[in-house]
Image 1 (cartoon, helix red, strand yellow):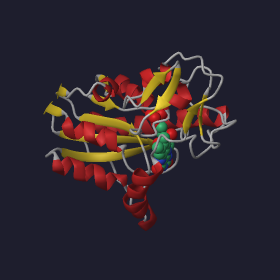
Image 2: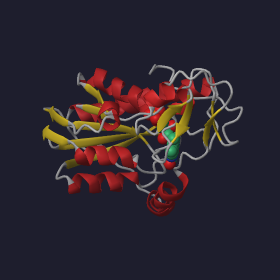
Image 3: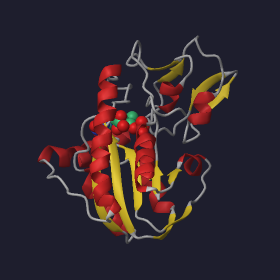
Length: 251
Ligand SMILES: Cc1cc2nc3c(=O)[nH]c(=O)nc-3n(C[C@H](O)[C@H](O)[C@H](O)COP(=O)(O)O)c2cc1C
C-alpha cells in the first residue's frame, strides 16, 4: 500500500504514479490526521510512504501518523521523499523509525519536484515545473524496478552538511520557524472556508467570515497555495509570489 501526505500535491502525484505502476492502492492520510483517527491498515505488498521533505526530514506530523498507525501484513517499508532540491540525511531518520516500529527498512528515494515553500522561496517557472515533473517520472520509474522485486533501493552517501541539516537545523526549524503567526487573509478573501477545510491540523477557523490561524501549523502551504482568490499571505515574504499546486493534481 502506498500512503501519502501532501500539502500541494507533489507527493500525492508521486504516490499515484507509483500506485499505477505497481498496481497497488493509494491512501491519503489527510482525513486520518485531520480527524484524529487511528489508521488500521493491511497490505500484502510493501508499504511505500510518500511525503514532502520539511527541513531535511519527513514532516514530523507524518512520522507521528506512521507511529500511531496499526500496520498489518507486510513488514517491508520504502520511503519516497519529494523535495525542492535535497533531503540531506533524512534516510537515517527513516531507518530509525523502522527500527522503532520493527519494520524492515528498504530505502529512501529522493524525488526532486517543484518547490512549494513560498513562505521562504520562490516557485519555479511553469516550464521548469513541467521539466521537473517529467524528470520525476523517470526517477520513480527507476525505483519501481526495485520496488516490484521487493529489493532494497540503492542509497547515496550523505555529506556532513546534509547530516547537520537533518539533525540540528531540522530541530531548530521545527522549534522556532514553523509557526502560523505570519499568515493572514487580505481584503480579497471571499470567506469560502477552503483554507480551513484543507488544513490538516484544523488550525484555521473562520471568524466573522475571515480565517484565523491558531497555534498548530506544519507549514504544509495548503492554505496559502490552494486559496482560490490568492487572498492569503505570509508576512511580506509571499507577496507577489506565484502560488504552487501540482498541476497534475487537483485538491
Ligand atoms: C515547511 C517546508 C519545508 C521544506 N523543506 C525542504 C527541504 O528541506 N529540502 C527541500 O529540498 N525542499 C523542501 N521543501 C520543499 C518541498 O519538500 C517540496 O516542494 C515538496 O515536493 C512539496 O510536496 P507536496 O506538494 O506534496 O506538499 C520544503 C517545503 C515546506 C513547505
